[in-house]
Length: 154
Image (cartoon, rainbow, N blue to C red; front, side):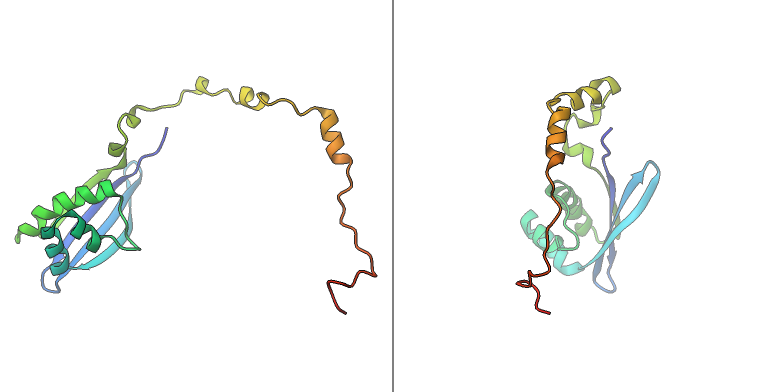
């Protein structure tokens, strides 16, 4: 069963210090959520970029240390527009499941009988005992002679 990551992205406004803190966490196992990353932004700058549109938001939001996928970025942008427009709201949590980006994938499962490992191993099956002996018969021991001082001066 492929493992899809459920993420939580939390936006927190710190109006006093003009900081937007973005906290990313992920569900690594059912019910086990680990914090992954925390990033601080200039609240005015990201808010202004958000008003300009998605590309402006992305330019400010994405960083080398925090680079969400385009799909996730679009989701964050859509939510951020309302978040920044409402001065009363200082926290927002966005749940994101990357299975949503792969239509039909959540139904995928691999049945034991779908893959016969033995048949995969037998498929090539051309390596005969004689060929193996032939390969092993060559002496591939490196040969050095004491007179050979071309590489190393003593």
